[in-house]
Amino acid sequence: MLGPAVAVVGSRAATSYGMHVAGQLGTDLADAGWTVVSTGALGVGTAALRGALAGGGLPVAVLAEGVD
Image (cartoon, rainbow, N blue to C red; front, side, top):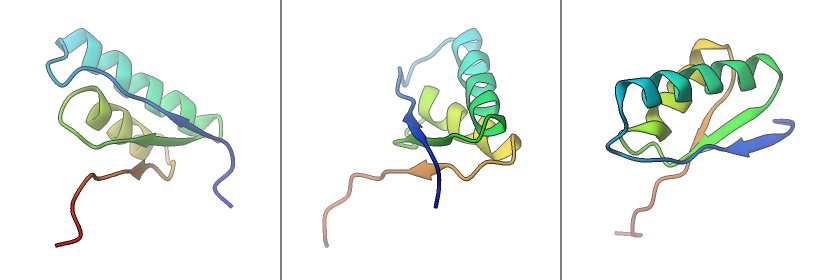
């Protein structure tokens, strides 16, 4: 069981401050036992997933791709 989950989304063209905040948010959520879910697109989503990994969490990336 992954426990509670939260999606983190945001700009692909985030500022360095936005990337820092998203990473810290991912770390804090993982530390609190939340599963971080995002698209994995460059920007805020990637920063949140990396932060969750740094916090010892189990992040989930939802990738939009076709069957073929």
